[in-house]
Image (tube, rainbow, N blue to C red; front, side, top):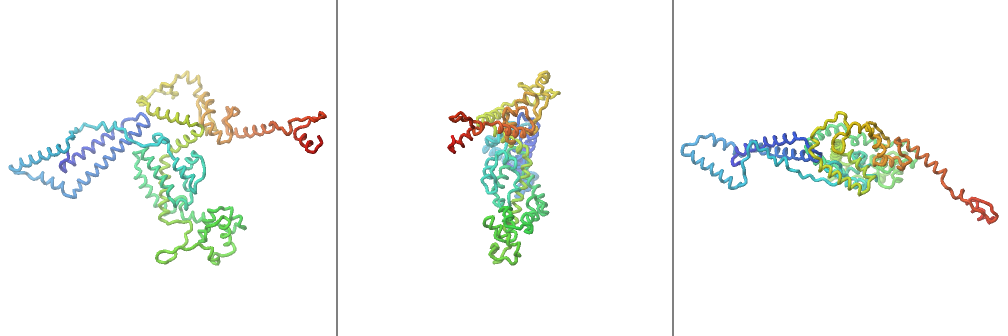
Length: 500
């Protein structure tokens, strides 16, 4: 009951202590599986949010801007007279009855009540089917946005996941749109909050911004230093003797070089090269004014210097900060990126039915993991686990040779333990993906071959097949009326000449 300021203060302090005890007891409990660990983190985060909001209310009470707390304390300190003692008593009793009339569901909470229902509460966390409760990232929308943009290139989804954080390769003019970077930052922030709710993202960004200001002043941000951009747009014309050599630089570099000199940067690649090549024989000051870009006018009528492909300094700084934040989030989610890339490569070798079956199996496995995992199993020899969740017998371990390690270079130096697992891996997705990357068909000819030298063997097989291949023009035989035998090519030539 908080009908008075002092009672509200006491109740708030009691809630803070109770929430602290709940958070400690929750963190002391070892979660049974990854999903339980995620729910535990969200429950603790909810408790911390309640602590922050309750502490904010206490601060407002202690600030006492309306002097309500001060007046109530003075009222209690003033000794009532004999006649006023009962009036205050009945006045207080009236307040208590009025409070319970307005709050009929209010109940007495003892100091030992730990709100166990909060610990049993299952948080509502929204994940897409691709994310599998935070195990993988779902970058398909960003991938479609990338390959359909002007700066994007067509590539496989697995390759995109591998180069996802390499936004420094995008030109400044394309970054000026900001939409792609904003979508990346929004998704990564949301994913980190859903998978690691105890991470203080605001604190991480605050520290990052303070470091960014210092690096920006010293031009230490990769791809954003003024000195670096000047070097990128600088082209020494003394090294080029013809227009064709300039054409080979490409449209973007020619555009940057023209813009840096205040010249028009539009037109085809040939026109840009011709315009830039004029500076080899004519100084910039003597060049015809028709080749210069139009200088925009400000509101006061003054001209602004041509900035070509550059954009405003404040926008430039804001986009660079977004890029730094995005890279920091990628570092925090590095393990998720590795799992996502492996999963994307694995899906390339699976059919739709196999992918659906595997997804259902993962969901069932997460749901059926029991609390038995909390118990530590005595396994000093580190033997593999059997179907019953216990270490297999040592004689079985030796019989199958599970202590023998086999490495496969084609699988990225992945280790396989035991002969059976080694022989079986030649038909699995990891080996198939490695063979596809080398451009080799995964046939029986390449069983037991784990070295990258398999590429040389494939070239040798192709050459041999070319020699032994059936060639009908030379090997197919024809007979004329006189009984002479010719191959197909010779017979056709003689027939065309009318000699047969």
